[in-house]
Length: 598
Image 1 (cartoon, rainbow, N blue to C red):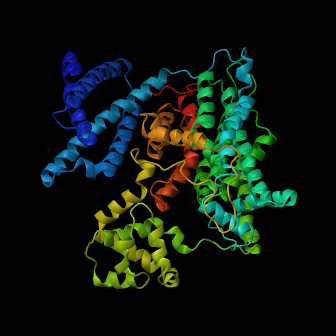
Image 2 (cartoon, rainbow, N blue to C red):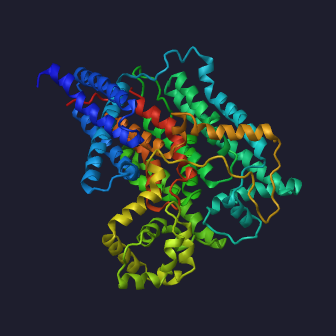
Image 3 (cartoon, rainbow, N blue to C red):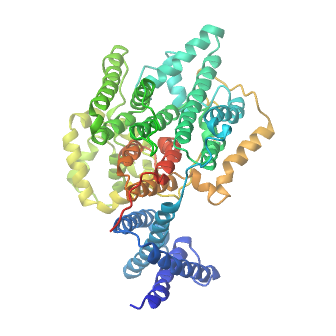
């Protein structure tokens, strides 16, 4: 095709398909002028994109990676929003046609955006040019530590001694002996809260004092971790604007500030995942030297090794899927650091030894009960229950076997697509012991059931996990009580209260519903897509070794896809959100990158 015709004609059908897909996805009428505006914008953008690609000549790696990522994002969208896309259509032919058009248009849009991001970041420079002359720049780690504490202080004052939900109160019940010790909420984290509770009781005899001390401790630890990341960015000569944006992200974003005063295992766990990932970056970069033969950017000291041990142990003990994520990451980590294998093997074996000692002999001696078997079956339970909830026919043999462990007549009324708790409780009312004694038989039944009802399983899986991989799923953040109703006599003692404080809190957490783009910061699905994009950017830049930094959070997300009890629980994926500034830095750092050619 003639180059001029190629640049002029090709964007026309592409823009038409993209506009059609957007109109359908947004529920806009075909008569609405927004359709014409979309076509015009997509046509002009597409024409410039074709010119840009002609000038830059992206390599095969760029093209293949962009195509794969665009296909993945398109698949996510079609799976999550198929009901909206197909609304009002009954004909199978029309439904298939709309899915094809929508998929094609979305794919083209995603491809242009992904490839444009790759090409733009090729020329982006994140290094600070005058870092040596700026004292303020050098002191940013200390400034970030203090500023975070100052920014979080109003949240502590408004919620003192801290936000305690049902989960927090369950841990408190174990601390005071009202409930038996259990690892349903990580025992190590419960003991940490208990340590400060005992200090408070010894000092004042008031449990609120100890709980407040724990919250302050959590704030100090998290501020220290963010300051450590800031120090890492300064040593990498990251531009001050990026550093200040990172500081604002941690200090001023409402959910970060509120979570710092919330007594959940997920908060310290997420901080430890960030610390663990940051130290991995230091390990990767510390063995290199600058072009002027100066010392390594990150001199690897004994303190760095100690922090790595602390982060790894806490990551494994503060949440059960943290241990699984560590194990999944470990083989790749040892391969990545194979040149320094003795050191890294020793460090990680020491982490494993400490964790297994606590999870084994120590917890056994303390008579800590493990979570019951049904607790780990959230996704399988939801998929099987969806068959009954959708009213699909079930064979007599399967019905008889399911009825042996659960009353199937109650499933349709009990099932909730977004949460597995109702179904888990229904099974607990049945014969759970029989299920545990015949695990293999029921696993085979579950597989056979899925082959008989594949679409019900697919619908059930989409609804059970959608909030983690699709952006347009709302999150409920910031509306928990200061201290939920409890039998222990615990009540909040806010130092900052009144209608003004309540109204400000309400406004801060309703802004995401009103402000475009800002709302995406509150979307797990949008942040997940961003992490995938940044991992792909790291790959195409020729710095594949740095992909190891994405693995801990990637493994955590994988465990959620396999076993999440709730379709969209913000705190479960909080570690991924906290690590995004680190991902941005490593993906956009062009120093030492290899130019990938055809």
